[in-house]
Length: 194
Image 1: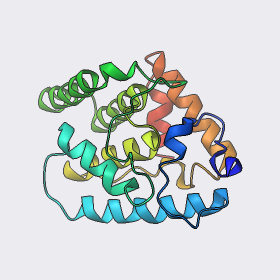
Image 2 (image 1 turned 90 degrees about the vertical axis):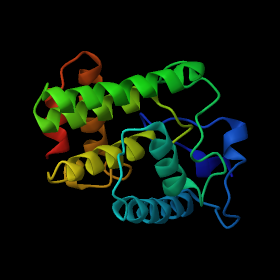
Image 3 (image 1 turned 90 degrees about the horizontal axis):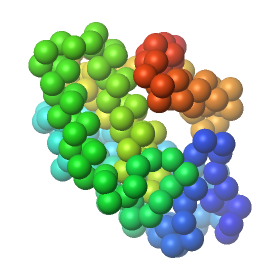
């Protein structure tokens, strides 16, 4: 079972306890896990697209993660409770998330940046906080795509490839996130629209 949970470079490794929370009993290979997660993500996306509500609140953020991963992981939709190789200390997550969402509301209200940059800044903050045991990048990409659509804009293409499978594309994404860590959002905006 350990090979099932091998993670790609730049991905968040799960703790032993979190690995035990996989729900489908048929998962024996990494591809089984990837397929189960992808099917669940599509159901979560359908759920989110069928709703017309503000996405900039903690309740929606948690519900969306649960809808995206809840058929695969028991911890879906709950903040992580352990340290990670990236992200803030887990006990700071609720406050940091609330601040990120309020920042985004202010950027929108005052038109602080172009819309693409507002969305990418939110994406970066969500990934930087890393609120969940896993699925943070996929969740953050869907959150900002929903934000773009609510603003009447086109969704991002995010490199037009499945980031897990596309090694070079994933490296570009991780590199753009690292540049955003240094407050250079241009590579992440460019990647989001590539």
